[in-house]
Image 1 (tube, one colour):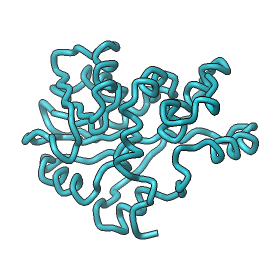
Image 2 (image 1 turned 90 degrees about the horizontal axis):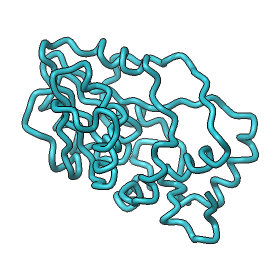
Image 3 (image 1 turned 45 degrees about the horizontal axis):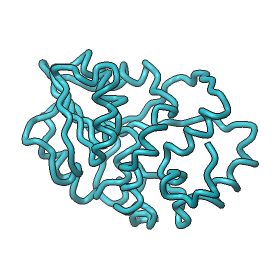
Length: 228
């Protein structure tokens, strides 16, 4: 594959603006503490400024405020930003929430780290990556953060259900990092994984966590297909 997957459209990304999805977003698994240790090790500048793109409710940005000089956090969902402001460190004095498409509203600053968690795949790569290159300090990095969940014993039964009800009926699996490199947008200089950790949820919360993903955003599904 050498082109952008067909399901990565603005319309599909816009499902993350919906209040119903935002209301259950907190049921997603949290980033482990080791994630932040890894990100902070990438920062080599004094008084660092960090840019978090597609920040959502600020799961990365809000915790990074405790370790860096300033964080700019961009998202095109006002519902996400409003929820993030109400969460711990959401009102930190060194956190600036910015509403808008990343492609349009990146501040004219120099950043020691530009980070995106489960978000950069939705953006226009040919627009954002040249801007990232222009905004990074000479020591700066772009970090793409994702979740890698272990295979669950019920996965074989769950997958057909997801495929049947998904809002993304044209979804295809792809390796974003490899694709970005093949398209000339990104040069991989290293990658790492945190240790796995165990998390427990009730069945209702686990089901709700699936509705925090665009593919199963309840607001976009037929009401008869949704049960939380």
